[in-house]
Image (cartoon, rainbow, N blue to C red; front, side):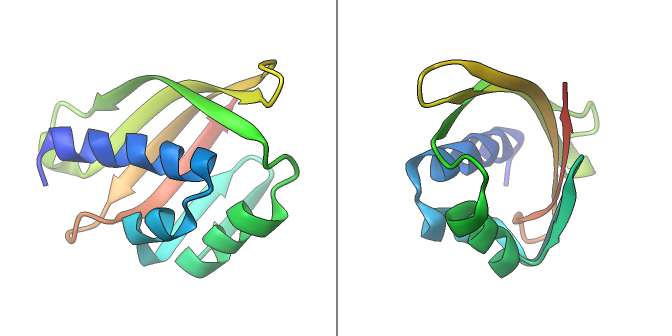
Length: 116
């Protein structure tokens, strides 16, 4: 996977969540995917997809990705995204930076979320 492909995968990740395309979301993730965020850690692809599909406090949100960044070492397997989360009415809920780590099979293996 090239740097551009990984950036596209990051953008596809947000689009899948916003569109409720949970099969597409699952296809991006390794089986042992881990999401670390300020309020919780979700371990495993199935657990993460279930949370996104059924358990989010506010499922009617839209991610606005302002930029996707690659490490200077393109082979590091990490990408970062800076953006904002909006509710269904268009009100900004918070700003975020997500750091994605890809495994050798080019699936997302870890996501760390930082919010403000």
